[in-house]
Image (cartoon, rainbow, N blue to C red):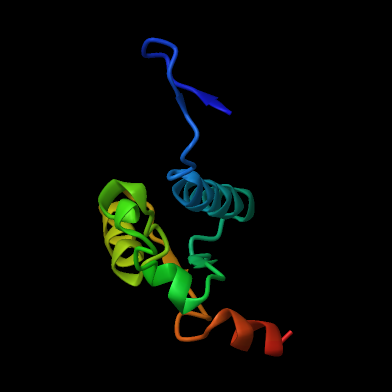
Length: 108
C-alpha cells in the first residue's frame, strides 16, 4: 500500500505498477551494461498480450486516467524515445502484442 504524503491519502489504483516494472527493467539493464562493460545490451521483453496492451475501457468509469495503458505500443515507443534522449538506449519488445491470452497459453 503506497502512502501519499499529501493529507494522509493513499493511492490504491495501482495505475503506476506497469511503469514501475518498466523503470526497474531499465535500471536492471543499466546495471548489466555497467557490470559487463557492454553497451549493446538493449532489449527489454514486455510479455503482455495484445488486448491488455491496448486496454480498451471495460466500463465508462475506466476512461482516461482510470485505465492504464503502460504497455500500449504507442506508450512504449514514446518511453523509448524519452529514455534515448536522456541517455538510456533501450528497446522494448512485446512478442505477444498481436496475440490473445489464449494464444499465449497455447504456446506454453
